[in-house]
Amino acid sequence: MFTGYQDSVMSPREKVIATALWLFTRKGYFNTSMRDITRESAVSTGSIYHYFKDKEGVATALFEALLERMQTELDTIMQLHESAHDQCRAVISLLFDITQSEPDVMAFMLYVKHREFLPNERPVCSSKPFETMRAMVARGMARGEIEQRDVQAASACLFGGAIRMITSELDGILEKPLHDYYEEVWSCSWRAVAAI
Amino acid sequence: MFTGYQDSVMSPREKVIATALWLFTRKGYFNTSMRDITRESAVSTGSIYHYFKDKEGVATALFEALLERMQTELDTIMQLHESAHDQCRAVISLLFDITQSEPDVMAFMLYVKHREFLPNERPVCSSKPFETMRAMVARGMARGEIEQRDVQAASACLFGGAIRMITSELDGILEKPLHDYYEEVWSCSWRAVAAI
DNA sequence: GTCTATACGACGATAGAC
DNA sequence: GTCTATCGTCGTATAGAC
Image (cartoon, rainbow over all chains, first blue to last red; front, side, top):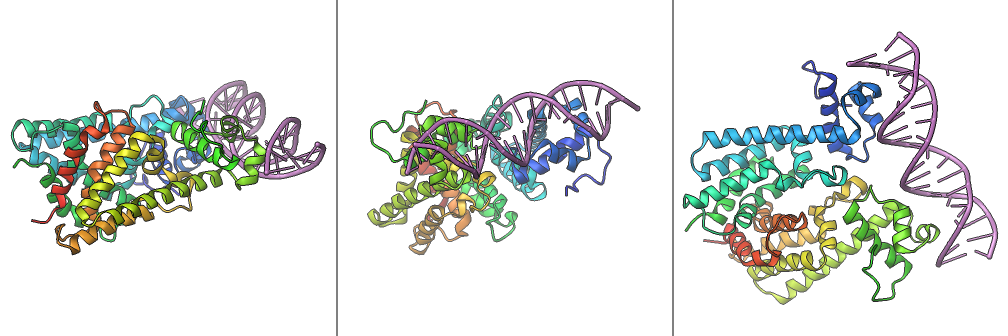
């Protein structure tokens, strides 16, 4: 039973989206029926189809909400930190935080194969948040913090280790809490791309 | 139309597995019906259910075949190379090779969310091939090639960059062929974990 | 072992009252 | 805007002949 939104009053639309996140990450999109969503959200079939065109419309709305939220957080990080080093470090810290406090959010963004049920959506890694992360790396090269090389390759090496740790955590195969690996992962990751 | 097995005589069982790989990676497991598999494999429904218990049985057989094949390749690498450095470098080369020559194989192993349709299967990253890769890293630490730290974290950082490049390639967002990034990715990855 | 025809259930989506 | 009842479709799996 989904109990993630007891504390605040939510509109039917928000209830449906929150429930969809809960169910999609737990059972997968295709193993979740509209009936499941009506039951767990306590919003009737008729109302759901009033707010959303169809099942795919629910998934699209959820996906867009999460991407936008992530982008907002990245924008804040870019304002708060000057160097690419500090920006990228803060990004990994953010990703680890979200993984621990809201694993569903992270799982849906990184882990779910959206293209299987959202055929018109571009792959996650060409979405705006991922582009922003690559832009941080490019800026680090321009400032001389990061060694000159292909931006795609450098971004993959800088963030790839953290992302793998996140998927390991989501798969439940880490012994310690994710944050215990933070400094270790960051120092490896930065060493991979730092200038000199 | 699937045309991947014209050249050799295949048993019905092999035809089904090859077709399943083709269809699952292209359309996803849930968007592929048993009807699709019968049509593309030219094996009748009755025969498929003679060789496999059900649709999930097809997926399981496919998954196990791919894991076993990967494990065989890793075993060969371990025999051919002495140092952890050379072993890990060869592993990334192998992964890049497979991605380019048989993208379906790589996509199904790394990218497909098996747990949505194989609920009894363990997550890929706790499968034997991934364990073998971690064992290589652990051995590198014991030999003094790789800096002492948590094996999970070091493995994530050593292979994470390459894996991200592979998913980028599978998503079709790389400008150049994957192999053009190989030396760059390897030098970053090794620098991330190397001793001293 | 291989085939065709079909049973059966579940699902997404709609209709139409309130 | 919200609800319940229901329709039509499709997909898995089986039955049973050959």
